[in-house]
Length: 77
Image (cartoon, rainbow, N blue to C red; front, side, top):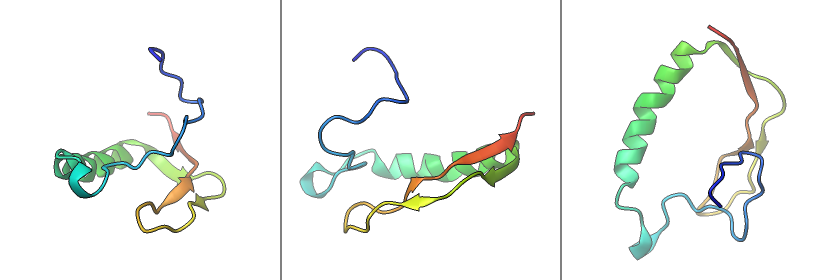
């Protein structure tokens, strides 16, 4: 539990990101604003950023949507 392992499989239920209802994350708006600023900046710094493989999508549900896998590659600076 104290070791970061990017390859580990999630235990139990999949992550619900910011929750919902009375359990909705108070920091969700700040996190979304940070993402809106950080992701374009990172994309500009990654030279020749491109999709490298097949994009697969999560099954459509009310709460969770988006890519399940989005393989990317870029040229090192």
